[in-house]
Length: 394
Ligand code: ADP
Image (cartoon, rainbow, N blue to C red):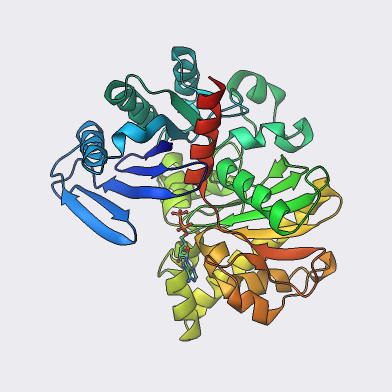
């Protein structure tokens, strides 16, 4: 049994065929640079990379190319359902859902909350429905896991009608990853599934942390949009909101232009003036680049403050879980962040920290309770598992 997992962005469509029971990935790939002459469909099977040009292809032609590929590979017949990543489900979805016209209408209602992501997600759903008319389609929402947050965590201290009339509240993102790694951490750390307190730190190009109590998200750092929270690759994370109006006036730009700069030119890139990529910055910092050093210091400092803050709703900490490209790979970031949190009972074990990572999950502190650990995320597998479960439920 296989599930086709689709993640459609504005100029790309990621796909994977996964067996949700064995976790085996038959193929994973991306159709990218869509709409451009250099558009291509790239995929990996058994560690070998393949690529096929699909010049000028838009989403529809790209997904047709994916279907043709799955047929060539003999995988098409084994697929029992299609799982779609949907970025913003607002308050309308607390779990993954079979896609129906009502579900599509609700996702459309969330477009103003995520104008860049929800439209391509919806496009992917529409095309997949046409290409796989007999297969169930399942929506898996980045926001759903955080719907268990209590009002004290999701309500902003702003005029109340902003929430009632415009839905202004904390929604949180990366929910599929936080949910996946929290489950893995409970198994790895041998915690009680009904009594555990975790902070999960998903650190990639976009980063967020969540407080997970007994399997449920009780608070998170991202908000109405994925701009809030900790410092990221190109996003500022939380700043004084008055900066937006101030900089718009000071530079004669629109507020939207300033917000674009907070999304695309800030974070690690903004501070370092060099790159949004942690690997590049670690190298530059080691070579003596002062702004790269500062960017990494701020990244870790802001992160440690956020992690400590998330222990408030938990009341105690059993584990701090690092995941995502930076969390799984950066020995330096993990060491610096844990080094700022001795009062939580965390002390880094340099040998374990250096030896654990993407391919070897595990504890990186001297004690196991509380502990810091590395867990590799797998959002595609989580989507495949949700899809299979809903398909089997009928
Ligand atoms: P996305 O959020 O786009 O899925 P990833 O989760 O792949 O991104 O994370 C990308 C980040 O992970 C980049 O900043 C990259 O530099 C960082 N990263 C990947 N490998 C390493 C490494 N070995 N050391 C430090 N950072 C790394």
